Amino acid sequence: MTGKFNRRNFVKGAVLTSASLCAVISSQTEAAQAQGSSSELPPMPPPKASLPTGKIGKVEFSRLMLGGNLIGGYAHSRELQYVGTLMKRYNTEAKILETLELAETHGINCINTPVWDNNVFLEKHWKRGGKMKWIAQAKVGPNYSLDFFKKAVDMGASGVHMQGHVSESMIEEERLDVIAKSVELVKSQGVAAGVGAHGLRVIMECEKAKIDVDFYVKTLHPLKYPSAPKPGETDRWGLGRWDNCWCNNPEEVIEFMEDVKKPWIAFKVMAAGAISPRFAFKYAFDSGADFILAGMFDWQVIEDANIAREAIASAKRTRPWRS
Image (cartoon, rainbow, N blue to C red; front, side, top):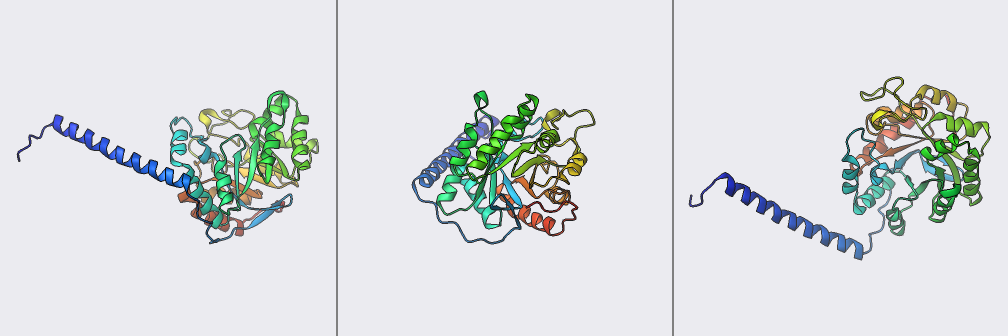
């Protein structure tokens, strides 16, 4: 051996090798991105599987819908601070398009995202022949403007609902009229109008006021997971310590929703990944949810679609399907 092997030489060589490798990967990534931006996307492949559907307004939606939190980086990862950034780094535009393709070809025909997020991937999906429907979350603007609701309709949403935190703020401010006006505006455009909520009080107030919503979006999950909050650790809207709870009274929700005639989309059914999809999907459909939102990475889509198909087929529910 002619070279002298010591720790300093080893570290120096390792650093140079790592730098070279990173440069190669970076160059390849930039080339791939440039090629992807300049060339047309291939047409959508044919469907490989279907899922049961239900109707909201005049539109048929798959009973399993794609949640948008993993795409937007809304991690809800308790005290872990890096997860949202990790989600965004993983879910590049190419990966999002791949996820939409997988979802649609396996029967999932709807995604839910905020209208203020960058939804350009949806436009690209539609341009290649994708039929993914979009239910948009909207919020109230300055002076209680409803511009975000109108924007969602103009962008092609099949349904629009007030985001849960916003609905709860309107209830706190005693501005139920703003919720009612948002529903009226969306419906006047021929689009399904809904209201989202973490806390049950929002839906109770809307039902009491007989606001003519087309659907509700309400959290539902049991509190049977290790980091679930203890009694008294959640606020009135179901938000707990360390960002870890969104339905603090599932039994009350199930009981109240039993008599609600409008379709119900349940979300946070896995408590942001703390509950397995096999248990969570069955619990939600058995408990009366008509549809469920589930955040899915690309590698989870096929399995989750299969689990949902089984859960729907075997559902033991007392609440009739409201669609």
